[in-house]
Image (cartoon, rainbow, N blue to C red; front, side, top):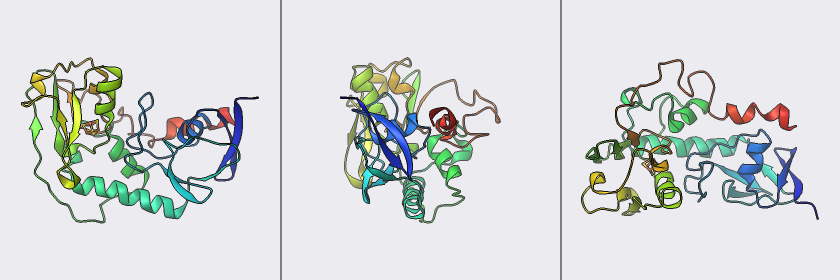
Length: 238
Ligand code: SF4
C-alpha cells in the first residue's frame, strides 16, 4: 500500500506521507499555516493554538493533528484569522515586549506574525506584569518579559541537548520558564552552543554580545512576511 495520500487545504489538493502532521504536509506543499510554538525538528505540543485549523469543520491544532486521506482542512478564513489575531494580541499585552528596544526586532516571530496579520495596536489593555531577567550566565540571558511560553527551549534542552535546563513552573498568569537550579542560569550546564539557545521565537532567550548583529533591511522579516519562505515553495510543489 502506498505511503502517500491526498487531502485538501482550502479546497486545494495536497499530498501527504503517512505519519505527517497537517502542518508538515502543508509546509511541504507550500501552504503556510501560521504558528508560534511549533519549531521544525522539535516535538510539537499544540501550545499556542495559532496553527488551529478546521478539519472537517472541527478546530484542531495543525502541528499535532496527523494528516489523513480525504480530510478537508480550512486554514484561511475570516473567523480563524480573527482568533489568530486575538491570540497574537494577547501575547503582546500579557508580556512586556517593547519591540523598539528588543534586539530580536525584525527577526522575532511574534512581531512578524503581528505584521502579517496587520496588527498595529492590540485590542486588549496592557497588563504590564512584573517579570524578572536572569543575566547571570556569561553567554546567555533570559528576559522573561518577552517569553511567550512556547516551550521550545524546554523541548530543545531536553530532547536535543539532553540537559533539561528549562521547565515551566507556576500556573495561569504566574506561569514562567524556570531553570533546573534553585538559583539561576549561571548554575546550570547551559552552553551558548546548545540548541536551546537558538530556538526562542522572540527575544526572551538570547546569546549575549551578538545583539543587533543584522542591520535593518537584512533581518528575517524586513522585506518579506513570515511564512513567505514556505509559500515560495508553492509553485514547485503543485
Ligand atoms: S524563553 Fe523563548 S523559547 Fe523558552 S518558552 Fe520563552 S519564548 Fe519559548
